[in-house]
Image (cartoon, rainbow, N blue to C red; front, side, top):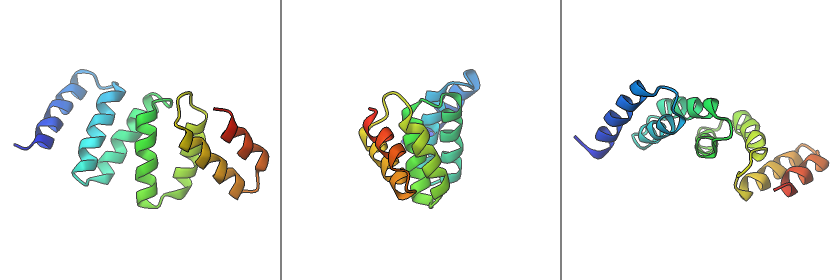
Length: 116
């Protein structure tokens, strides 16, 4: 049994014991991502993010997944949501500002870019 298989087994047991733990969902998503199962990875990243919409690691993982799969509408909505979160990285604010700027919404672009 490889490291990913071992990790997946432990995380699945943990999910059974604590099914609403965002960190476990996120970690399980990472295992599936490394196994190249983007569907399962996305499922677990979304579950973790839905438990706590300010859980930045899950949000960033979803951003990367949406960028990789070309789901631009989902990416842009999530980018805006993440820019509102305390602790979001500066790059998220910059990209959210660029997105608003591309829509011609300069006031929103400046607000989201300079609030954090």
